[in-house]
Image (tube, rainbow, N blue to C red; front, side, top):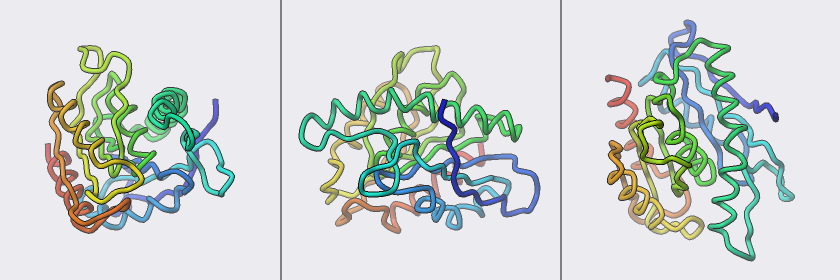
Length: 217
């Protein structure tokens, strides 16, 4: 099994971590990209360890990918196959993190951008343990096997997408919002107006408000 690693930021309070925020980057990027979100959120979870692992596979253009994308064929099919194949690597990373630190799943937030959001949503809704929350920026939801069943937990979900995204269709987050809501998930959904394939300040703030709410429970 491939072992993931990447940049980390220790708890803001200088103590042993009592929570974790795992940040999953997008296609062709690396962990140094999303670890940049940590300074915006550390005050909300001062005891949290922030970690942003590099995805398991390199790309020809540089950086890493969670799974290959079929640019010339059926991209949806490649996403569905990709998240299923990459899931064991990410789930193994989470279980190693919990075992090594003693941090509990219910004190863990899983967040991602683009391809990383697809992984966060797929894995976060496919665990028997309930996470503190799952955040998907500019992503899509590929439901895991058994989705909506009693065997899987239903963590709070935050979805953020720019309405001018020309890389990942913003309608995919709208569809995810409907599907998750109908399955009984607590979903917070935000559309960043006039924004393309990126995380805008209003989307970042919306996610911060979500973290504040789930951390207070």
